[in-house]
Length: 477
Image: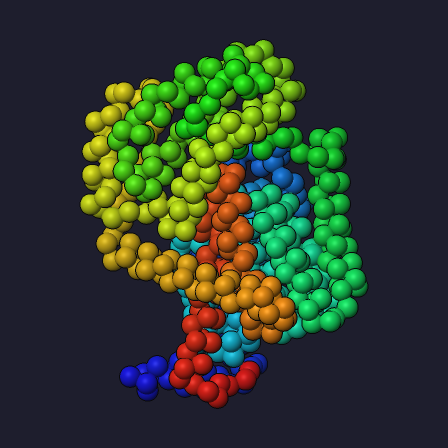
């Protein structure tokens, strides 16, 4: 058994030379890129959110529209963007795989990540659509790869690029404000390590400021405004679809009463017919967007709110409801956090069949405009493998965070490079999921963007655990 466990390290000995192992990873990345680039892909270029990015609607963040604008200036038309997204994706994945190989001193670790992400349609499919996920994937993998580089979080130049990448991720998806945890942890570790803090902090802030400035300039060139239109209220309205509140205590009672009237039947049906977090999560999915996009104009009309004031009005309504019903809001956050951590949309055939029959029975009681979400059945082995991995990933995540907090906040000692890399990845996942669950629905496409982090953290932790118990003399690349 021990000999079998030693087999990956035997492979590492074969690829002990850093350059030769990097060439192998490069060759395999090129092969994967070629396969995806030349085989016909059955994915839609335009998906539901695409047009809002092509038009660069005022409420959208500037990152992806800016990327599309720059890509079109290089090559007219939308089709070449697919190949650009594929190229960026595999370049970033190769960088992350090489970084993980160096971080763990294991070629097998880097190769495993390259295959798990690069050969998986669940990740690569987003490169074929005009939507933020692919660019977000690529940028996140570059950031994590840099954080895993030896001394990558200490050198001034690297810290400057870290600041640039965090700001760029925020420009692509504002929920990336969750990654503000990275500079906070790095600065705390610098302080405990008695390293120069001001110079490093300035470098990170300078990088972020330059990227944010570029995004603001692009927005101003299109919309003659430095800031995006308010979208927070619209997001929170979906989160509060099932909240109980007093409309008279909101800033716009007439609009709030109409809201409660529209949601009354759906709230009753969810309470009566859904069991457990899985069913509550799945039942809620389409109702979020029904309220936010289909009915919100009608709701706001009840209060005669002018078009240019509607964003502010939604913010006021949402926060007044949260103050009245914090428990309902936190319950929705918990349901969606569960959905993100477990990919709750993925269910075996037995569950989906039972749930879909239940929905068919209550369908006549739902408003005609609401289309209930019906999950597709998953192969049992696929379902079991994904859920097992997620259980392992969640356990590893919590252990790493516990040990990191104990080292930083209890013992007041800096984290060594290996511990720092693991801790950063674990906290980034938790922060991203928590902020996503606080503002949005826990959709698969939001959860799946954190999987390179999941995989890198789990693979690295497994390698270190194995070395601790079975291999006291691990190779150094």
